[in-house]
Image 1 (cartoon, rainbow, N blue to C red):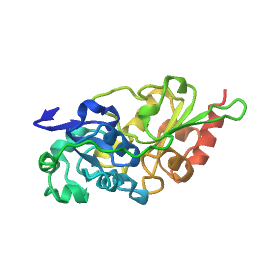
Image 2 (cartoon, helix red, strand yellow):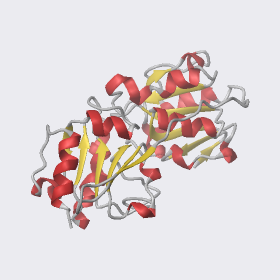
Image 3 (cartoon, helix red, strand yellow):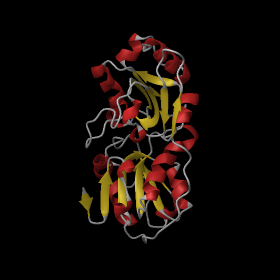
Image 4 (cartoon, one colour):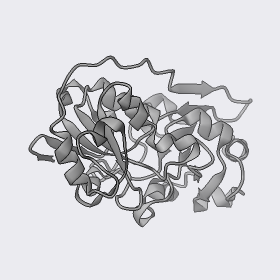
Length: 271
């Protein structure tokens, strides 16, 4: 997993202070929640997946976030490396965006990710203040007889107590090579994700497709309709770009709003 001072990680949600001072090539999107996870670990520099850039350029919002901290950051094209796959990003990624701090180190658009990461190793490691992060998890009460909805910025925030709830997350819908748990720490009844631009090999909806194996409705909203990494935006602004077979069987379809999908699935799963 390591090459000199550079490491790759499938998700920045697993970073902690033991990674301080390291250059991290992540499979994660470059949205606000991912930026916060990397910053609290005090990374030396970081490379994300641009997730198709998307609404309000949220898929690369980590770059100005880290520029404000004086830290180098870059993103790779979602078409060059599978989102959620840090190794693929390191080995095959092509840089699509760099922040000013990374540019001063020689990082540039079109560069191989591994070459950009190597240049980032020349940056100084230092402690920096991390901006406070707004609440990233909300439970919406249910009408009588219907399941509650948990709205989370990241799939990593799904909890065991969310079993029996419908999940709306800002996360991409890709599976992780290093973790085969479909819903990580929870067991939601259904899941709504962000499509992250579908990306290389269509990997960013694989988790949504796999929900069919457990007869769980799943869908993804277009990254151009809602801010990736922001569960509230997915729920409030999202327009469906993909539905799995189980959700389609309940009447879900591409083009419906996330709010309409939640209402439909709530009624379908009412017990």
